[in-house]
Amino acid sequence: MSWRKNKCGQQRWRGDRQSVGKTTLVQKACEALLSSGVGVEGFYTEEVREGGRRVGFDVVTLTGERGHLSRIGGGAAGSHSKHTVGQYVVDLPSFEHVALPLFTKLRSAGSSSMKVFVIDEIGKMELFSQSFIRAVRQTLDSPYVVLGTIPVPKGRPLGLVEEVRSRRDVKVVHVSKENRDALLQDILTTLQECLKRAA
Image (cartoon, rainbow, N blue to C red; front, side, top):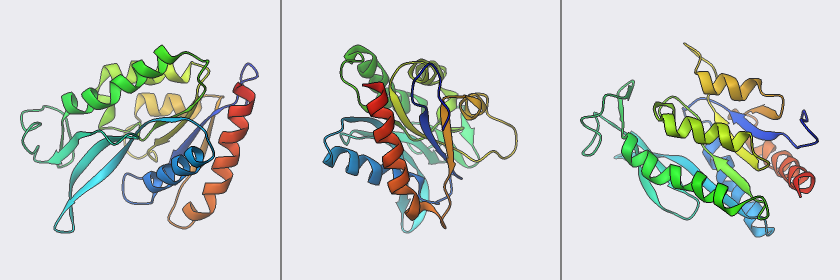
C-alpha cells in the first residue's frame, strides 16, 4: 500500500463484470465492518436475473434503496437511452437518482464522522454519468476511506478507471474466483488500518 500526505490509501479491487465475486466480497466486508461498529455508506451493483438468465444490473445502496442501472434492450425506463454497453441499455437517470445523493450526504457529514465509503463499481456503465465522475474524483481527493471496485482493463481504457488505478494512494487487489475467499480478512485489516490513520 502506498501513502500520500500521511493518509492511508483507498482500497480498490478489480475483476471482470462477469461473476468473479467482487460484489459478494464487498457485501461481506460491509457486514464485517458494520458488526465491528464501523460506519459504512455507499452502493453496490447487483445482477438482475430472470429464469436463471442475467437481464441487467441494479444499483443498491447499503440501506437497501434500489434502482435500475441497466437492462437488456433497455427495459421500461431506459429504453430510450443512448447509452449502451453491449446488449445492456444504461438507465442513467435511475442510477444517478440512487447513487449521487450518497456522495452529497458524505460531503455534508464532514470528516468528523469517519466511515468507509463503498463504490461498487467504477465501470463503463457508471461512467456515462459526468456527475458520477466528478463525485468520485472529489471523494478520492477527500480524507475518507474508500472501498471500491474497478474492472480489469480490456479493450479501450476507461479514463477514470485508469486514473484510479494509477493513483499513488490507491491499493489495487486483483479478485478472481480462485482468491476471493482468502482476500476478506486482508481487506478488513487494511481498511481498519486506514481508519485508524484517518482518525
